[in-house]
Image (cartoon, rainbow, N blue to C red; front, side, top):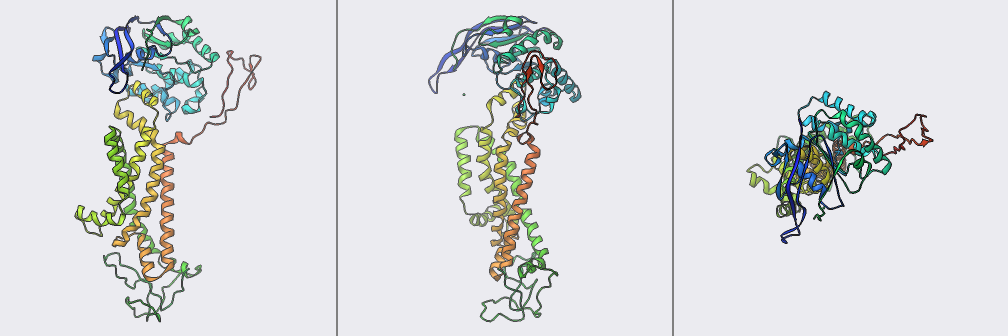
Length: 530
């Protein structure tokens, strides 16, 4: 199958400025025919429209007028995603997705086309051998590659799907001259071995190079500008609790009792007939520890109730924040409303919100659902702005590369944009996790069971150990959940913490490798630590 590319009087106009109307054309009435099986170089100065012309071929840029045809078919009539998957595109300073390993980057387009995973990986390793790219690099991430290995990996990525058309936008422009010359010298040799059909290969350059003179014909691009302390337990010290099954806030003598009020005490609670203190385990570390050991089941019950309110709120905040943040990026006015509204929501006193929500939700004031909804709202108030900022910070060139490889909008968002924004979102989620664990205790004031009950009960009865136990349990729970979130983040975002191994340095000495004594191809090999 042959692929002939025709530019038919294509023009591209970019606006001169906001409200200023059209500006000078980036491409002006350009016409050319690139025959199948040839390599054509668009040679011209920076800003003359070379990249714009290439991006017209895969519909990354739509011409203002004119047509681009492949095999006499107007590409405007073809599905843009399917078209891009059939065209290899080596971008100038981007291409390899930073969160995917080299082997996964190379196999990306074949997998999008439905190729078997094993076949795609076999093809990728063949290309790495063909391009003199060590197979040991297959498991690395792009940031762990050297300056010359990165562009070579991008070429392998573009060739992996055996494209009908190969677009190369100064693929070795950022590489040192010796490496670029070596790479271009291999081009005539490996080109016949990878192609199984007659392909057209436009490339661009700002200056004559061995690539141009050795393997291609030249077409000069038009010159036009382009438009970026605990008291001891005694019969006079009440040790009471609230029954879990009761909504009452009146203490009941359940884990301690007294026979008579302490002299001078203002305690008016119930008095049990037995004056025995709660039995404690031997080996206690003092009165405070004795209280904790005697009431471990009760503390555990409050802890479980705390988790059942906080964890659903954290998960709901995370799940809802992502679509809301994406919606906020749709337009500036909408973003202002959503982000500003989220910030104002966090200023609402938590106790007031807990009282208002039962009226809105038609639930009982002691229903845990009220706490979960309130905590979710507070989580969204923190996470929506953080997620929107994280999505904004994703490199536009990486998204451009994903689009050029044939990813649709939803796939690009889920598999590229969202993972790359993951580290910043993870930071916001950790803040939400700790904040939610803390805010959950407020529900105890309204009678909703949680670790906050230990605060209110200990304060009302003057039991310092109970208050300290609540504080310690809340802080420990926050630390544990924060650690779990961090561990899950590292599991889901491995490229953010894995470092390149110490690869050392290999230098040339009189044409031989100082490390191994092997004859080399004349290039100096440098491979530093990432």
